[in-house]
Length: 80
Image (cartoon, rainbow, N blue to C red; front, side):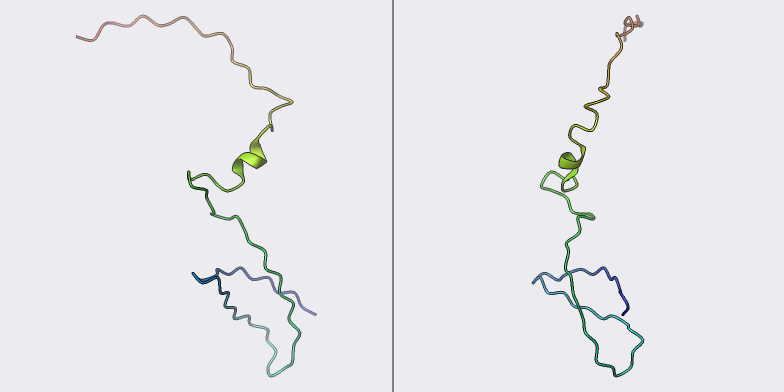
């Protein structure tokens, strides 16, 4: 048994067309197909990768970001 992993894209009708080279000539074969959608390149309506906020929300909960006190404002010459 040989496992062949192929990435493909469905057409607008949701049809997946596969051509998989096996190296077997005129042999009967058994095929097991697992269809698993990928999120690669998929974005939501606002342009963010799908699932981005679910994967990143709360990742810094144990190490919160702290902002040090702000430095005094620099005095600059007025614009003429």
